[in-house]
Amino acid sequence: MKVELLTTSGKPIGAVELSKASTVQDVKKEVYKIKKQLYPERQSIRLEVKGKGAKDSDTLENLGIQDGGALYVKDLGPQIGWSTVFLSEYAGPLFTYLLFYPRPSFIYGADAASSKYECVVTIAAICWSVHYAKRILETIFVHRFSNATMPLSNLFKNCSYYWGFAAFVSYFTNHPLYTPPSDVQMKVGLAAFLICELGNLSIHIALRNLRPPGTKVRKIPVATGNPFTILFSLVSCPNYTYEIGSWIAFSVMTGSLPALIFTIAGAYQMTIWALGKHRNYKKEFSTYPKQRKAIFPFLI
Image 1 (cartoon, rainbow, N blue to C red):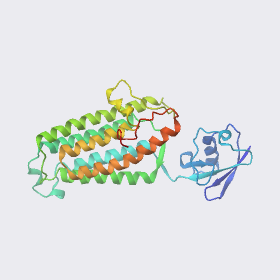
Image 2 (cartoon, rainbow, N blue to C red):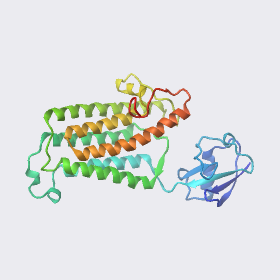
Image 3 (cartoon, rainbow, N blue to C red):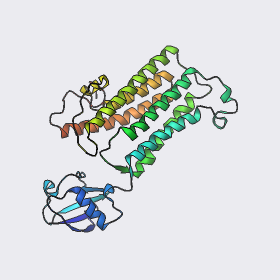
């Protein structure tokens, strides 16, 4: 059957011959044959100009497309691989933070490096490094992405956020005039940080095991034999819950206001993401547990 392809501005791309069993992915391949700059990852195929993008696995029959029907193609702009984005996001703050740790003279002055280092300053540098090294290793060995790419513009936005906050937090935490908290506060914060980091890793591994390699299978996430995954019984996105917990703990451990500001900014964004994922879970799975919240147990 013949299907008309149009841009979301109404300009014709061309007509293609497809079958009812053809998928959205097949449509994208046909678009690419006509317009080489629109590689499949750059396209969003829609039934309406302002509608949602159809899934690659959807067939034309399932979408209700008849002979002579039309589909709209939205250009998502230049794309970049998720792994590349995450590696850039996480390697940047790791090196940016450590840039300030030696107290270089061009930042703090000639005598800064000879000033006494409080124990918590070194511990904070180690914790920060562990967190972002973990993220890099998870990107390489743990995460399985449902989408291969994301808009290139997100790379600059995300890197600005992570790298900028890394410099902000590190500048003050490594400053020669930094005043450390009490030993008790430091130890409590450190213990909580390590627990939350283990929890975050546990959730990421549990999520990875839900999706067989090379597939886009989606299942309801549930607790496994790992005690850290019990949080799945309370929230949809415990990885974000643990992530926020890690940065609250880091802020307590260092007694750092910049770290707390970073925590609040991150918590706000992760709450938005969690609410969106929570809504999608409830729409996708009719048996999704009603007692779960999105990110904060019993609250949100």
